[in-house]
Length: 288
Image (cartoon, rainbow, N blue to C red; front, top):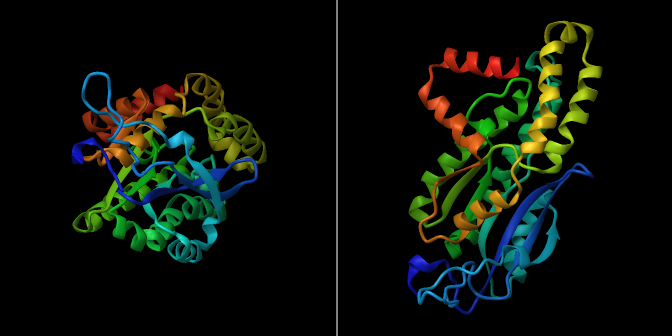
């Protein structure tokens, strides 16, 4: 097979592990997804132009839930019961966050955010790397533009996503000699339950803040909450993230970073272009 056409596992069934956040129940869970062919990108499907192109199958995989809280045990079971299945990829997609000024955030809530957004990907990567190394598989971490620029009143989320970015960069360099590729997908606002429920959650948090917090930050937080409705209307569909993940998993030469949505690309450009205080001023005007 021409390696430029995609990733293939002749005679074996590739599987992906996808770790996500069940927003309704507040639980972190994962799912094993398996295709009905031997390639993440099927190189045997020809295009009408005479060449060949990958066939997209990520949405059509068989799915089997697993508990991410016992990653080492799950990795052991996967290795024992694989029966010809190779672990081709790990996608870390879980993300949580608590809004509000850092001065008044509950440290336990910040710790929980870091636990889900950073420690979770670390633990799963550690548990499943022996299997990923054997298959020379891929790891895809879902970050955020909040991991590029600190977000006012969303500090716990930004802190964790900056941490995930450093984790991805370091892991990519460490695994490069082993043939395991690591990619980071960094979207802007995406139409997910996290966005749709942010205003209600933020309003509740604003009401629960102590009087001193309301005195110092209430007006600014209220303006941010008022902008969430517009953000929700303009949020990009999840398919833009899916396409980036597909490329990171399937391409012979995946990118190290995928900036998806124009908001993310614009913010990263401004971060590169402007001095800190100029960017601070611009972001403050956007809130006002």
